[in-house]
Length: 154
Image (cartoon, rainbow, N blue to C red; front, side, top):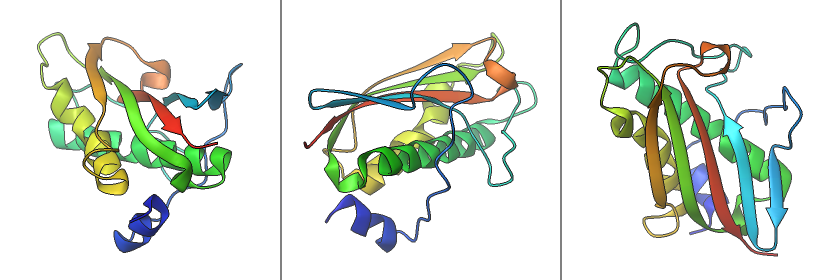
């Protein structure tokens, strides 16, 4: 099943593709690779999910922030590529989690994005090499920032 058809089957409506807020491109294509810039958890009302995991956010709240971030990433891909059906596979995912020193469940948080991509692109094409790291600061105090590399069709 195509990724676009899968979105419909899962009843997922993508948000408006977020606009860059700095000097960068949301997506750079080099050959058959698409490098997606870091995205944050942007809500429909244009506010961001902020907070620190292990302090004022729990794992479930972080998971939801990562899923929301993944939806924004899919919106950017769809907007820039014309269709999610151009995606061959997710190659690499890097997730940063703003957290306390004691917080050690970064992978469980980034699963919010990973599970979304698996559900949309399938078990093989939607599951990639991945890193989930904790950090003490992210822009605007956002809870998570995620970037990805995709293999795409011409």
